[in-house]
Length: 441
Image (tube, rainbow, N blue to C red; front, side):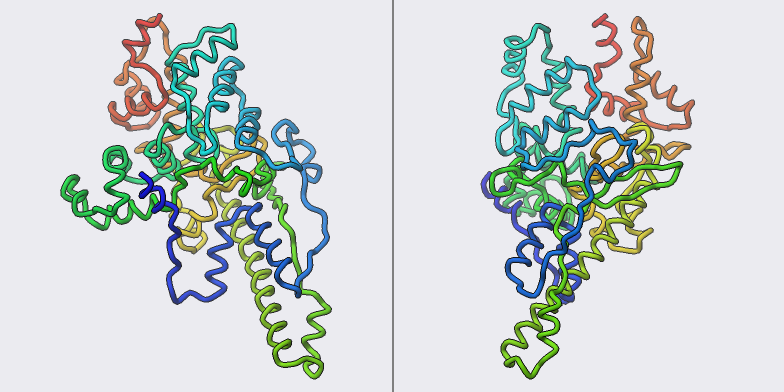
């Protein structure tokens, strides 16, 4: 297992032939505010030709006065993994008894982000510390909820395979049925690049298996470790922008919590006076100023691309932003990349582990994407799941709806979906079958 874990951490090498600016741009669009600030801080320490721009940083006081103060808490001290998860829980509008289960689950994970307790052990803790009676089904439902709703992706997994699968699903990866079989049954074989054996076993091409291997390398096998003492940051503050609507107009306020730098005028003037400098000093200053200029220019380009991407996402998913998951439209990375005329990998880097602050709380940019379902209204798979949940919540409890009944109801709404797909979504939602729901009465 160590072998696959090590291989996952390998960073894919940049293709040769890219210009220095292109390489830097690719690097910067992958960085969130906290990591960008670390890079800029290093430049300030190592490059004497740059200096920090002293300016006010956007804070919650600069936002539209109508925002809900309970949605955000700016911390001066960095958050631990547990604190980060508790802060997310605080923004969720869920039943207080359900929150109690999730609190215990949060305190049951290890530093890597994995659940260290079995369901029965969590149940025992709840029985000892609360007056309510909980069931094993409720515990499993809560764990499933945590895996789906909390950041970072892959958190609350029971093992490496589950951690990887959670991240693949979060990334809207295709061919998940095949990938799930391989990861659950032959993760070590994949980690050892035994593509011939896997190809013979599953009847898959080497191209597909190599693509899966590369996809897995970019996942995080220990999602909680980014919060350790070496990597910890102010994640409550690490969102890219505050986005809201004012009289129907989309407002975008970048959250520049990182340092801003500029070229020192002193060294610029010194470089212009060639007669007073030796060739070595002149070349040194010229290199440092060129490097800093490239960094400053590329940060601007990075910010502009973030703004274009986030604005486009928000414009397409306006109803989702205002009203929730039920209104999420089908959307793929390629839809955004084609509209902005950039490579799909650029959009993937921008939206991976990045967040925006909205009136509904902090939202991961990956939540804007969902696969399409065959329907007259171009419904997304996420909105369909919520619609199925809503239909079941409003059913006659004495006569629960079968999957076939739900299929017919959806058909009247212009949504054509197979019964087995409804059963799959119902299972994802941890909703029992109609016969089980009837017996539970």
